[in-house]
Length: 238
Image 1 (cartoon, one colour):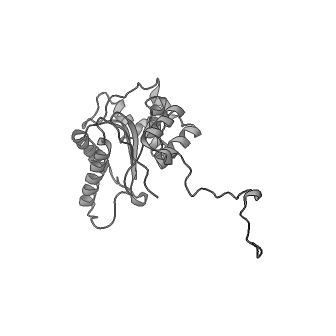
Image 2: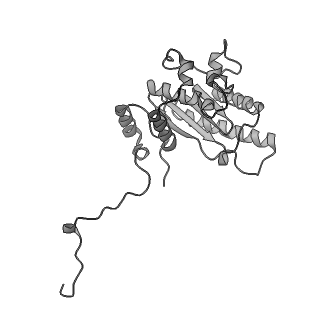
Image 3: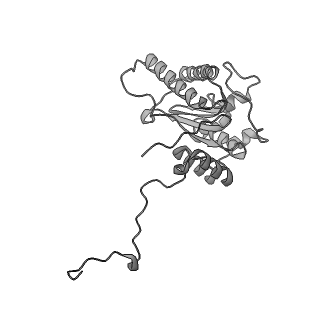
């Protein structure tokens, strides 16, 4: 099956995700997380991309970002992934022992309204959902922890958000997302489908040719013809 087209347009906002091969750990200690943040910072200097939210987990990472030039998100993420892979193999002496990542990154575009805030909540509470911390803001390797500091630690990674956070943002992060919210985000992660209200999704799908991201997967069912339309079986007389 051909891959769905990847949207990477200047000014769009996207969620991006990649996992370790076979869901193996890609961050084994604090120094690994620190090194990846330095890679992100270096990449942000190389490519015209803004990072709004992120969370680094032992086996994967989530980023919410916006390219300011067409194609810059893909270039940025390819560079980040390749650089991290190279440094991981060098540090752990695993060159030739298999892939670090499961494959290319996954991404989907989102509308810059409450859908953006919902995705940021999903990203920033990832460690809490995985029961790695008691409170979401306690997870050191993400944008929520950075945002809470009096001054963002070095290296500086975060850009101002396109819309303001809602009041009591930290409390909102620590609340569970609703099942419809989780279902919608997980579907978009899996399929690369746009996330937004129906009119925005329809317009985005038409504009970028993303119809396949909304269709059920698998072959279409073959429905039997009505009896009146069934082809006749030839007889000896015919």
